[in-house]
Length: 150
Ligand SMILES: [Zn+2]
Ligand SMILES: [Zn+2]
Image (cartoon, rainbow, N blue to C red; front, side, top):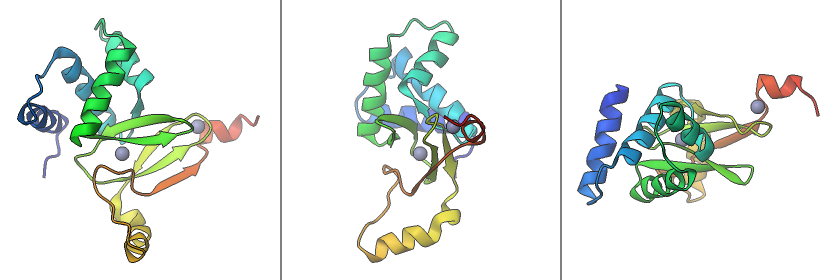
């Protein structure tokens, strides 16, 4: 079981190399950002990834971030879970489920056992969860969004 952030990012970079993709600075940086987020049990949308990169002094275009995230999803290294018309991205190496705030789009990862019954029920109707999918997505409102009523 790969647990440390560095190991997870390294494993993802290996996957890129095996797929014949060069590990460019942008790809490494995006994976680093997703690795950091995974430790916080979070996902990031493309804008958040971009901000983390530029915050570290990397001159990367938002369009590049979008393209890199697309590659990572195609390879199954990351998965995209839709939140209100956008997508949030997380490392797909550890199976997990998602709780989404519909107010701010904030995403928290849920451990697999917590929603085992839902996954079993889905399997009974023929839908099988895999690491590349969003699994079970629970929608609601986070504490910050519950206090700022619109
Ligand atoms: Zn996820
Ligand atoms: Zn919220």
